[in-house]
Image 1 (tube, one colour):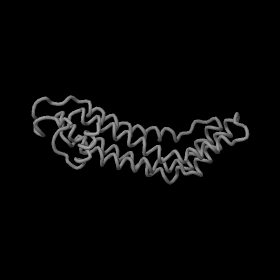
Image 2 (cartoon, rainbow, N blue to C red):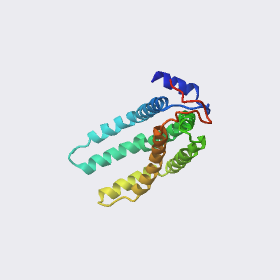
Image 3 (cartoon, helix red, strand yellow):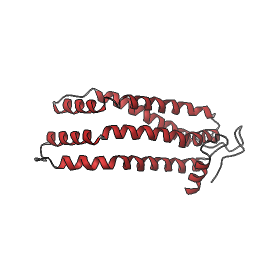
Image 4 (cartoon, one colour):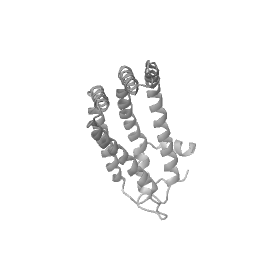
Length: 196
């Protein structure tokens, strides 16, 4: 796995050639784990404060009071905005880390590198909508909790779900390209896949 990571990091901006599935998947796993570590590092300090305040509620059996305390703590800690900002930075990092690897993987299966335009475009759309929601994020969260506590169904969640689906479409496209079998014969991109 270390060899695949080193190979891909050395070729971050090299869109030529072919990478086999093994090289691609080991590197993809590294990028996923890196995303998890960064997101945890960004959110754990805020979550500690949220859990501390929520657990300090006088009557822990009062679900509404616990939820209200947790929401207030989330807003005080700036946790929703931290999650969105971290997601945006991770989106840029993922584009930089995965673009060339995905193109080489597409080349290995005989697809043109322009196939990257689909997940890249979707990723940029997801990032745009994420950025746009930053200003009203606290108000949106407060309205959603108030509506839920009043027994209603917050409409905002439909928009958030649609936005998240765009992000997951990017992942599914990358997984689909990664799963396509290698061409066993030379193609216009290289004689054969790189095996590290």
